[in-house]
Length: 519
Image (tube, rainbow, N blue to C red):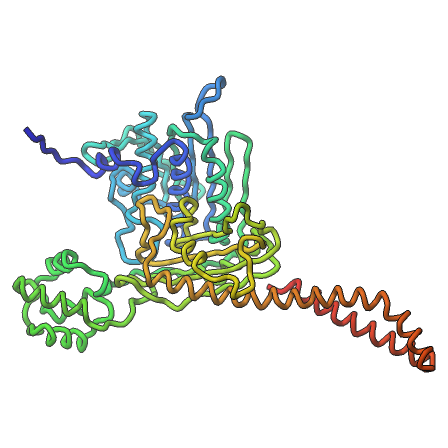
């Protein structure tokens, strides 16, 4: 006999934690650091606060035989907006509860990662996690120790304290233990922090671990990119189920007013045009639409030529990307390009790319490609070869640009920002090959490739001129004197010619030096 049961969201992710990036002890260490850092960055950017993040990693095992999997303590502190005291237990103790279910660019998808981190710690150590929070201008700091009740999907508070906030601190501290393989994950963690410093140059971050590693990423700029604004849904980005849900919220409104209220790019003129095409009266209450009328209205909206979605919901990194690349790699050349806003499935997106050459950029090994991928200001570390950006780069004929991407110190940087990044996995590892996104990445990289090709051609020409100057400088005086004697030319004329020629060569050398410091 079949047995039927209902499980909570917490129970579902407890049973399927690998789909969120918690698939093994090594990957888990990296994922926990990433999710907590992203939560802190979002918290700061929500109120235009320049982020200051401190991360401390400790080994909680007793001294003795080294084990592959250890009990690790992680503590992440930030100076963000904090969480209101009545929301804090649910923000970390209830799966699929949070502030990220709005239509604007943010790092998280469902506010799931931070909760999965503490849930993983709970199920591997059976210990509570600590949350310390204070909102801006608050008189008190709130301290919680709690578990997640997995069956009920509810927070279970075991200790609470309310502390006077004498220094008017604001932010969040999350502190818990988990079982993980830190030694195996350390390289990926450091790479993630390094790349975060590239894409978020306005961040200050301190990382200290129990192995004696101490990393400090200093803030490179004291301003921030434009803030992402919450926007209405675009008609092209709504399925029939969502359409029905929206109707239930405003069932009393005339259908024309409903369309104007709930969707961007629809004014009263566009609404009436859509309703005429669907054969529906504009004054009928939207909640009274019959199923066939609803289906017809939805079909017309899907085929109607709406303008592109509003890009105010996006916060591209812009010229800050160049600042981050320059600070971390000191390249001799950078070409940056930001595409105009585009859309896929009703979601706006912007592609930004950069190509850097020389400096600290290494020459690729084993026919690999120096590719740094970012989505909504998140570095993507794993599965680069499955990513749309890698496919674009490999599909381009680099011989046309006279560039060998496998044997020269060249690095590619691709950032995609959108209200919905088409990740292939819930763990946010790589981006799907959406045709619209592929096209924008290709056009942007090709533009940078042309700029790099022009720079390298000019550099090669100047290097040729430098070699030419060396040979001419070596022999010009002797040849000129000998030729002057054969032609019976006055010695003073020969000397003037030699001096003028050397001045010309020196000017070419100065031009060559100037190109070396171009950006």
